[in-house]
Structures are given as C-alpha cells and as structure tokens.
Length: 259
Image 1 (cartoon, rainbow, N blue to C red):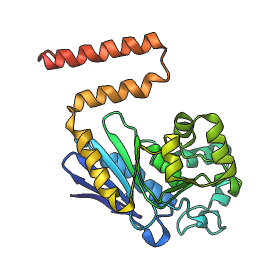
Image 2 (image 1 turned 180 degrees about the horizontal axis):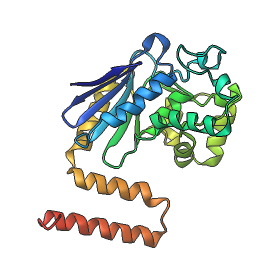
Image 3 (image 1 turned 90 degrees about the vertical axis):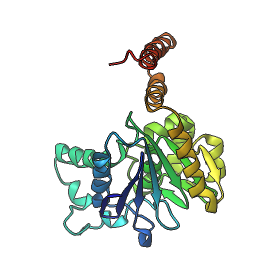
Image 4 (image 1 turned 45 degrees about the horizontal axis):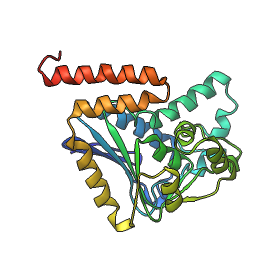
C-alpha cells in the first residue's frame, strides 16, 4: 500500500514494514528542500503499527547529497535559495535549518527500527540520512563522504552526533575535515556498516534483517532499543536500574499484569 508519493519520496507499507524510497535516480537522488519536507511527512504518516522502516535509494546511488542548485542565486522554483536565506535574521535562518533537520530526526523513533540500504554514493546529506537510521546494510560499492567542508559549510542535518558515536571524535573529524570517501570495506571496519554484501544481494540481505527484527515480540524490542539508546547518557548504576525497571515491566506483561 502506498502512503506517500511526492517530491522524489515514495512510501509504501507491507504489514509491519514500511519502505521509504528516494525516487529521483536521474539525479542520483540528490536532495532538495521539497524532498526534505516529503521525508519529514513520511515520518508523520507512519503509524504505530509499523515496526521496521527500510530506507533505500532508487538507481545506482543511495543519494549524491544536496542538489547544488540550492546554492545558485535563483535556487529552486518556489523556494528561497540558501544564499537568500543567509540574508535573513538569525531567527529566520535557524528556523529554516531546523525545518530541514526534521527530515533526519524521526528515524530513531523509539517505536520502530530503521534500516538504511546503501548502494553507490552516499554523500553529504546522503551520508547524514544513512547515519540518521538505526542500522546500515551496505553494498560493496557503497561510498560515504561528508563533503560539506569542501563547500565552505558544515554537516548540519543531524549527522555529526551519530558519526562521532560510531567512529569516535578523531576519526569523525578526519572524515569530515578531509571530505574523503569511506568505502564499504572501511565502513565495515569502522562500525558504520552493520553488514556489507554484494550489490545484487542487498535487497535480500535487508529483507532477511527485517524478518529477524520482526521475530522478537514488539514490546521487548522497544524496551531493548530504549535501554541501548540511553546507555551512553547513564552511569553504570543508572543503566542497571533502567534494566531492572524495563525487566519488571516485561515480566508483569508476560504474567498478564500489565496495564
């Protein structure tokens, strides 16, 4: 069932799984403000019945990043160019960037697990979109690069936090400051990729992972995700207490004593 099909974003649902497809292969799924609004809308239309969201790119590339037309004086039709936004007040500029970020901030919702299926280029905003997801399955031809610095800007779409969490500060700085490509084999070594497979096996590997994620009872998966997501901000003793509280909820539910 199709839930959304607009501005280069297609959303379909099959049971407890939703698939979000970047559907502008002619431009290697280059991103625009309109696409970001559609991606934000995708998060809003996915109800609580969805447990796994797969994010994929149509064609040879996952996403080549921001469409450079955004930096042209005329921008996109009906949109303010980035250069025009720069002339606005601090509040206006902050609000505009915050709106763009909404496309990248819902993928780690506590009620679902998101999986990015990455092939070909994942550059800049494409890299950050893959980082927005909980998990990443990569084809052997996947290439990540954070090219914002080379354009005189910074990664501002939520990608810096997960990148540092995954590879550490020093490696994240080196990747961002140089803008170099991180190929699939290195992404695997660094922990950016959960799994690397041959390009022709990508869809099957994602389907197998999705089935495995759906095999566990939903509430147990939700509680486990919450424990892991919050672990970095808790002390050891706080984490142990959180584990006890979560387990108490699970045991009461299994005993038929839940709310």
